[in-house]
Length: 496
Ligand code: B12
Ligand code: SF4
Image 1 (cartoon, protein in one colour):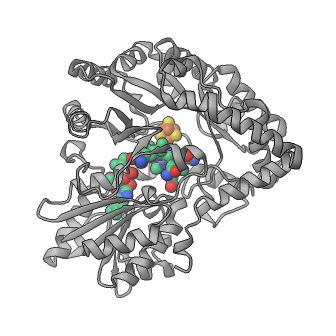
Image 2: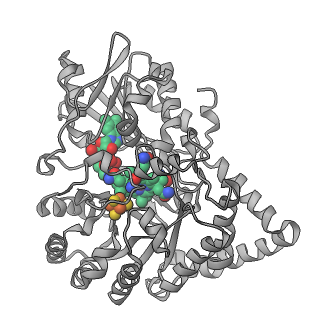
Image 3: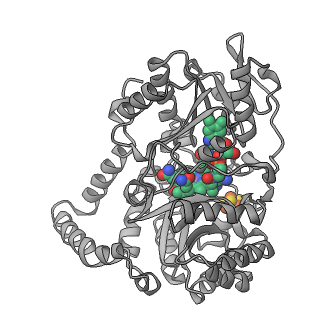
């Protein structure tokens, strides 16, 4: 069997995702790595082909002539996913299509009943490695599909959903594909190559905007340390890439394991290894010795879910009071030379213009190095969605294309969703302004930092001063929104 696995071209509408960071999709790489070796597997990350999606798929389909295409999509990428499924069926009606990833996992029952399914043969819910392996073998050998766990397949024209599989034993999962079977290339963080790996799956915390629990339950499983080291060796020695994004939901949940993992990395004596990860504030605040070890092992930057400076909003998010922990976590990271990207969430039910401003001011006060700001998004099947629905605060329940954290799909008790969208944008400009790289970042001496500080920022400032004179804040906002709205519009997929 020839299998082609594809991830979607949609990016979050901000410059970072559009241009600065393109990390390979680990989901399809891991599924591909676990399909039995007598089949041929190819991977395509459409994030690297955003300007010519149809042309590229047409070319690859003609070249590979796959028997099975696997499409991976988050909720907000599902619309594009169906367009691509339609295109593939038009190009090659006999090719079977399986859809997996977050949307298929959370919404299999619902999407299984829609007309979209005329383009889709199978859905796989949850972790895909074993189910997809079994599906490929079954299609090759004509085996019974009813016994494959987590598979949804058509019986007499409508979908039948087999029982969900147990969480996989991570010791049994083979390493992901990172070789020439990857047909797209050029993955980068600014001007340096970057790869992805995982050291664990799952998280036991209870943030109610998070889709995680529907994928793995509130469970945490870790890969054997030897397997993580093999993975780093593959990236570092075979691919000669020194920057690695660790995709774990919350790598630090078990600090003893993290310290052992760091010891193993330190013992390998990699030169200039740069690791990036996301972690929760509580654990980073209360385990300074772990943070120190992480810095020694090469962790350069950590994404912390700080979310909000208001205890009330934190409690609505199911986070508990982490205000002090956020500050301590940042202090720990800075003490050991790690950069902090702080995640902030806006648009809680009681938010008004002042509280949006206050949250940005809180962020400035706690001195994280860069902000990653989102508006509450009522992702399907989350506790947050249920709560906001009950309170009548969701303004867009159906157009999931806008469910990526950058669009206001909700209103608050005081702000309409248009006002929320504006305040989210405006207060950021006023309070945070243009990004000013902190000393720790400047010290890294990377070329792109100087290009930003001495070339791009001054040019942008000048340009925006002129724009402001002409059209003011509101005009500038409208311009920005129009630009962002076009970012995930793929002209060549129009009509599918
Ligand atoms: C790492 C990560 C990122 C990285 C992505 C790096 C990369 N290249 O992949 C970064 C930080 C860039 C990122 C950004 C975002 N992310 Co993100 N991310 C994750 C995270 C933590 C891990 C993803 C991962 O690689 N897992 C490891 C791999 C092996 O697992 P996997 O991708 O889930 O794939 C498995 C299954 O889903 C399934 N599967 C997946 N695809 C397919 C396809 C087929 C055919 C089959 C059969 C099976 C299958 O099998 C795979 C193997 O078991 C997840 C949470 C999570 N646990 O998955 C959130 C998550 C996927 N992200 C999410 C979101 C919302 C985003 C953002 C929109 C957030 C934002 N506003 O910025 C952006 C979008 C980025 C973009 N494309 O522009 C949400 C999606 C919610 C939803 N319902 O759709 C998640 C679930 C987080 C959450 N807490 O809710 N993300
Ligand atoms: S800490 Fe992160 S992964 Fe864990 S529940 Fe909260 S948002 Fe989800």
